Image (cartoon, rainbow, N blue to C red):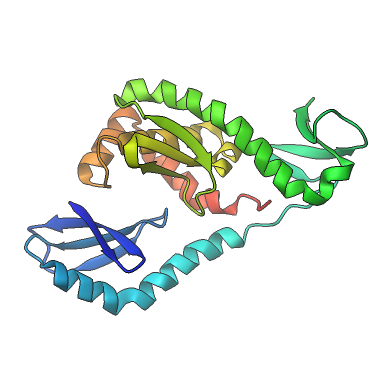
Amino acid sequence: MGTLTVGDLEFEVRRSARRRTVQITVDRGGELVLAAPHDCPVSTMENFVQEKRSWIYTKLAEKEALWAEAPRKQYVSGEGFPYLGRSYRLLLVRKQNAPLKLEHGRFKMRRDVASAGREHMVRWYTHHAVPWLEKRVRGWQRRVGAEPAEVLVQDLGYRWGSCGRGDRLYFHWRTILLPPRIVDYIVAHELVHLHEPHHTPEFWTRLERVMPDYASRKRWLAENGAQLPRL
């Protein structure tokens, strides 16, 4: 196992003695995987990637387009905004001590900041995602047997999470829009990456050990995650 970088494309390389050909797949999260025979030279893999560049970019663009098709929200009273799998109606108010708050089952936003509504919603989601995800990570790290150095929340494009250098875990702020059981799948997934950097059979075995129903959660995320509303 290892990685291969060709230009701006990075692949997880999976070698197998049983494989006779080179194959490229684009995982649901946008990760690129290159499967190759055990003794396949790197130059052969690089040439194969060059031949398939157009196809690869098309597939990646399709991933991005799927996210872009989600409906865009309007910052008007009555519009619904998701938070941890539930929808909360927005109410524009004339006065309150914060630009945006969740109170009595409603998002309340000051009318004078509605023109910058997306900025305030993203800031609110990010601010609340950090402690919520840190608590979730602490709960799952004992089961996985892995402790990250840091938990960070930011915009990851169309990826829900990432395991970075120095054992840091990154999560998209949009994870806080998902139902908790789906967020738990993302959290457990990234924690297992601290043991298994790549999506090897060992990775999925380890994930199943701590989350026996991970496949159904993964399927839900693949089918529904990209359709979350755009802010």
